[in-house]
Length: 99
Image (cartoon, rainbow, N blue to C red):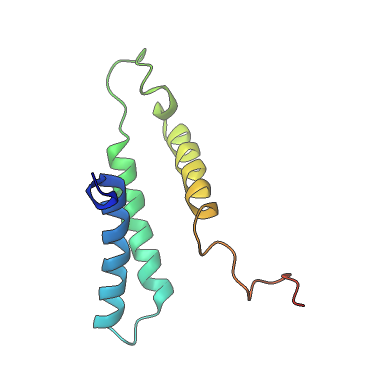
């Protein structure tokens, strides 16, 4: 199975491709607005996919049993994905030493 056959990789790749297509279609659009819209949609889909089942004793749903728990998990994942991104650190970041 190639990386692109993996549902996670396929979704991530297509989200980036969609952002690029939207930017190409509207040259006046601010990239931040496009990225914020993609993020908003991704968060909505993620929250939709994480609805707990009706069984209060379900171990699989324990970490998503409430809105606050879902938010904690979402923030944990967002930090993990951000820190593992090749774009997390930038040469022009404030406080970066330059030799």
